[in-house]
Length: 75
Image (cartoon, rainbow, N blue to C red; front, side):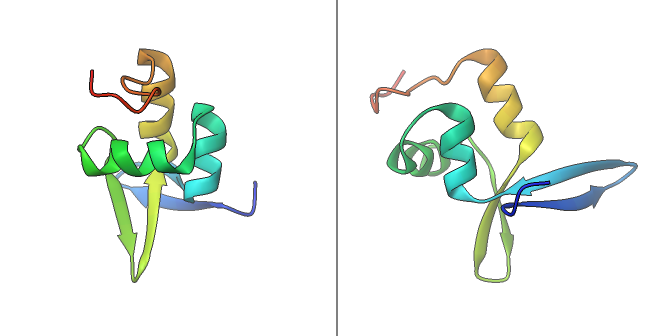
């Protein structure tokens, strides 16, 4: 498991929480693009205290669907 992935139990399933740099790497986009996806509600965030993390399953969904605004423009 990478340093930026933290397991979290959600009901009966287990998911991993990813930090911003890991999400950007998996989506092959910049950190700014990840922040824009977050701000637009395309990529839901999880707050852990003051930290912001993203569910690996949500990131995988975007990869499978195609990132809607990887160019930084609204889709």
